[in-house]
Image 1: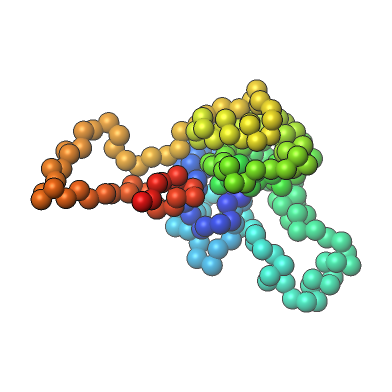
Image 2 (image 1 turned 180 degrees about the vertical axis):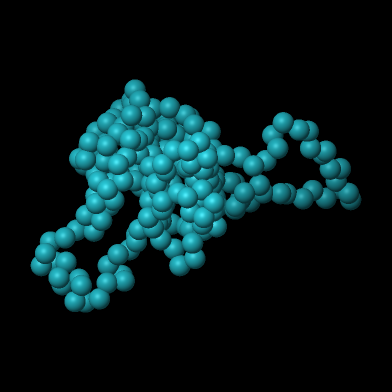
Length: 219
C-alpha cells in the first residue's frame, strides 16, 4: 500500500515516484491500495490508477474540521473521536504487507509512521526534501528518531537531504538509503548547444522556479 502525505500541492515531482511504483505493482498483478489527499479536482494520474489499473484509492481529507458542521464538531468532541481514527481504520482494513509512506518534506508523514508502528505494519519512508529553515527542536527530534529508526528502510532522494536530516536529528540511521526520483528528461543524449546571437544569452530553468525548495540563485 502507498500513502502520500503531501498536502501542499495536488501533484508534483514527489508524487510521480510512488504513483509509478503503484502502477508497476498493479500491472504485475499485486493488490495495490493507495491513500492520498483529497483535492477538488482529482489529479489525472490518480484517476488512471483507479480506472486503468483497478487500484483501490482512498482520498482522505487533510483539513477535516473545515468541512464539518458545528453539530458534527461538537459530537466529535463529546465522543472524543480523533481524525486519525479514519487513517487507523483504513490501515486495519487494507490487509497491508508493506506500507510506503511518501512525504514531500521528510517529517510530513510522521503521523502515518506512528499509526503504522502502533498497528505493527512494516513501513518504508520516502523523503523528497529537507530544509535548513525547518529545523526540529529537541522534543521533535526525540519523537522523529524512533519513527524513522523503526522503518524497514527510510529512503531519501539525495545524499544532501539525508546528511542534513541526520545532522538535524543528531543521529545516523543504519536503515537509510538513497532512491532516485523519476526523471522524464532524456539524460543519455547530447543536446545541441545553441550559439548566442548578438552576444545575448537566454536562461532556461528546467523545472519550477522555487528558490526556497530548489536553491536557485536569483540575481
